[in-house]
Length: 475
Image: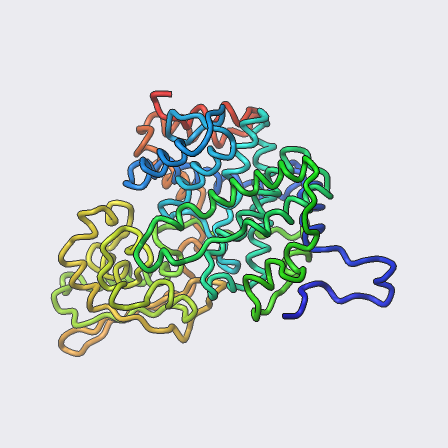
């Protein structure tokens, strides 16, 4: 594999090229919230709002209680909040718990070109360390935005490569973004921020074997990255000697995880601090794998066109970006008979069938009753998946649905730009409504509105005051 560094100049022996870790460390040290573009600030606030609402909604799900119990039993007591809960944990354990809650529904934001969930790769560490040191909300937002940008750029450099070889990209990049976030808040020097990334290269992992059976392990990935990133920052501050080239070095991240994959190192360093990718990140309208969203949009349109002809369907073809088929469409026999919520979230067959029947897909459609619905199961078994020849992937998660009726007629709809992306991005009003709907599941409507006001208030306040509004009523 060719090293992913910038080409050396003739006098490079006198002036060594900066490493990718140095580029990111310098950015993390110097970027200031007040100087970030208005579009970055606006979208950062909305993405934080969305992500916090998801953490609250997760408490309604079966995985929340056992996961929090395990984290609490393995962790230590402290002063950091667990969102929607009365527990107070040490910073690393609170970050692990909150990340699991934020990502557990698979309803969190995605940067489509880099194929990472950048908010959950950055926000848990930002909240935990900020609460520990009593930082302001704006200081937390600044660190969060730095982490989001780093996560996106690392993901963009590999061009979807992590997924192709069986890694969950967010599970990888969250180690580095969390280390930068924690290091920024803890006041690390540039050299220490480089060391924190060097340490993170030895902890970054997250395999996608959960896809075989709808297991819970993916929910753990970004939280493990937050825990490891915080640990790396503390080790670096204490003087830990770490590798200096964690990304491009021999046996570094790129070579060990991606051996024969082409790497665009410039995606990490070029325009860093001047060109921001955070505003391009998409907030999800559906609580399922983002790869399926184009098909989901098409199914919504066709549901209306069917108008009472559901019984006339012979079979359905779901058209998806070809690289995503192994994740959301294969093996077909398993995907057509999804029996758990996580199997369903990664099954294009289930998602398309459910939306064709009901015209929507939200958390209620993923309950035990929704999964067991006989009509959905029968129709999902008649959905076959094909590669979409007109896809704009990875810029957009395009998709289409073709319905073949028993009399031979067909209905077809193609979606080039999935809802939530590009000029179809969710508005501030959409995101606010999503937050209130999710937060009310745990806090109730009145407290959800109070939490909304606290999160979006632009007056000076501390992270501790905002987190107080997000705890369970008992706390």
